[in-house]
Length: 88
Image (cartoon, rainbow, N blue to C red; front, side, top):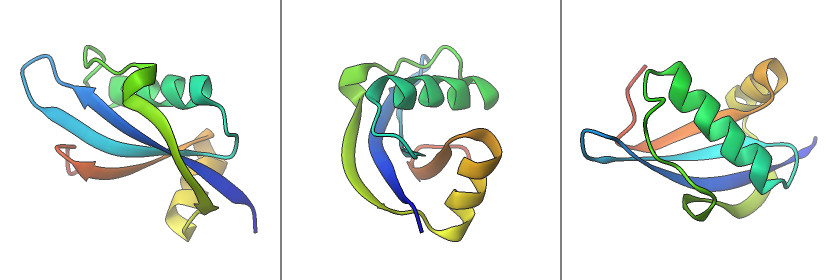
């Protein structure tokens, strides 16, 4: 059982609105969390959304649930969608 680190993240959409999600990674590394947030935003067609170190910050550490652990193992990070994110 490994501990993962959760970064609370807010991205501002260029057409208005906010996406709120958690970036979950195995390192407590704010720069990596920001890179992962940007990578995910690009992968869902929101490469122009604005996310900064001030809006992607360490929240807490915990053991990742099975689905998030699978995502971390596959791509190096997991995203837990909270508000304003596409359903899939």
